[in-house]
Image 1 (cartoon, rainbow, N blue to C red):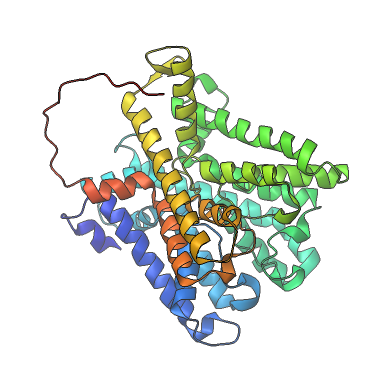
Image 2: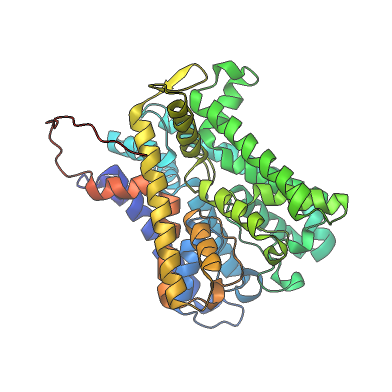
Length: 444
C-alpha cells in the first residue's frame, strides 16, 4: 500500500481510489480460498468480489449468508475488510507507515486530508492517532456491552459474535452472523424486541456515523458547544433531527399496532440504521410504502463526513436545505450559526445530490428492465448500494450479473465519495483563468 503513496504521478484522489480497489481485490481472492467457506469449496469470483466490495465499502449487501456460508476464516477476512473500509484504507496505510518509523510526506498528508475529509493538511497525523484510539476503544466497549446478548443465546460462540457485530455496527457495515438461528439473511430480526440490544446497536451506529472530526471537537471542547467548529454543530443538529423525526413518524404510523416496547425498539432502530448501517430488526414487507420511502431518503442522506458511514452526508443535505431557505427569504448568502457558507460548498452539495440521484435512478431503471422486480424494489436496492447501507427487500441474492456490477459500482462510489471520483478523473486537466461574460437566465 505504501508504494501507492510513492507514485508522484498520481493525485491524492487517484491514490484513494486505487487503494480501495487494491484492498477489494485482495479480499475477493482470499474469500475464493476453500478455507473461507464452510463447505471448503472455491467460491466463484463474482460472489467473492461482490462480498469484498460490500465489506470494504461497509455496505452489507450480500449474495451469500455470512453466518452459514462463510467459515470462521472467511468471516475473519470479511471483518478485517470491514475494519479497513470503515477506518479508511489510507488511514490504515498511514498508520502502518508511522509504525514502521517512516516519515509522512506532504503528498501523503494531502491524501490523508482528502481521505478523512479534514479541513486542512496540518494535524493529519494527530487525527489518525485519534481515529485509531477512538475506534478501538468504542469497539471494545461495544463488545463488552454485546457479550451478554450473544452469550445468552449462542454460548461461547457469542464471544466471536459480539466482536463481529460490534465492529460491523461501529463501521456502519450491516454484516451479521444471525443466519444460523433466525434464518438466512434475517439480519437482527431475532433481537427486534430486545430493547437493550437495540439501544447498544443504535449507539454504535450513531457514534460511528457522526465522524471523527466531530468527536475530536467533543473530546477537546466537551460541553463548550459554542466553541465547536461549524461543521460539528451542523452535523450534531442534523443528525439529531434525522433520528427524532423518523422515529416519531414510525412510532405513530408504521408500528402503531405493536406493544409499546417492541414499537419503540422498531421505531428507534429503523430511524437509526438506514443512514448507512444496514441492519434491520423488522421485515420491511410489513412496512407501508411511505415508510419504505422514508427509509430510502435516510439511506440516500447517510452519515457525516470523516466517519465510517457513506451516503451523500448530513452536511450536504444541511447545506442544500439552508440554501433553499436563503432563496425563499431572498437572501444573498447561505448562513447558519452566525457563519456564512461559501458558494463553492453549495455547488459541491448540489453536484453530489445530482450525481447520487442520477446514478440511483439510472441503475434502478436498468435493473427494472433486466430483472423480474418492481421499480420500487430496484430503486430501494440502488439507493441502499450508493448509500452504502445494505438494507434490501430480499432481492440481492437473485440478481443477475449486470445488476451486481452496477451495485458494486454504486457501493464503491458511495464509500469513496462522488467528488473523489470526479476529482480523480478530471484533476489533471488544465483549467484556464479566463471568465466568460455574464448573461441572465431565468430558472424555476
